[in-house]
Length: 207
Image 1 (tube, one colour):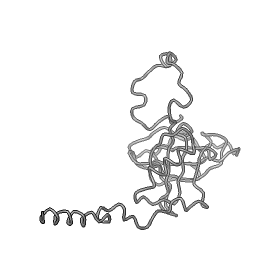
Image 2 (image 1 turned 45 degrees about the vertical axis):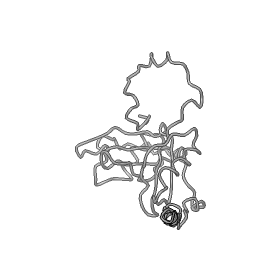
Image 3 (image 1 turned 90 degrees about the horizontal axis):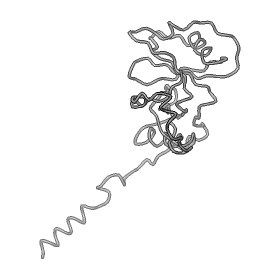
Image 4 (image 1 turned 180 degrees about the vertical axis):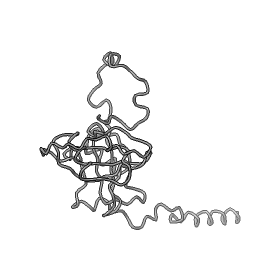
């Protein structure tokens, strides 16, 4: 199953395929596409899903994600984005039952591409990056991830993404996370406005 959107409003109208075909085709840039952002706050920490952004293309999605999820005191060591429709997900499980319990471990042994694996360990939380597997397709990647990344905790959902579909920050571009150490312009007291107010009150008192 391909992940379409994390927006709970999507699909509420239950428009049938036939009704949908009656709609006027939209232009190429009529609507932005949805991308999912993943952030590693510090080297050695996990790469976690932080939320979606809407953008006209991959490069703009990266910039929007950087502005939305790595500013205002949010430290960042790495940022990745992937188009939402390129995320293939497993079924959901519940009641401390791992989704891997229903996955048949029968990998093909044929390696054609790399896939990135993300686990959901708690309902309502974010998916966490686990690692890379080599596989033939989505089902094969899911089977391989069960073998190579066993978990003591229940895994309630798995996202599988082809490595080529992920745009990630480069280690050589770490300076994009640098911010000003002193931001006095954010504090009203640094504009010396109180001195002007005091001088104005003294002038009024004299008059």
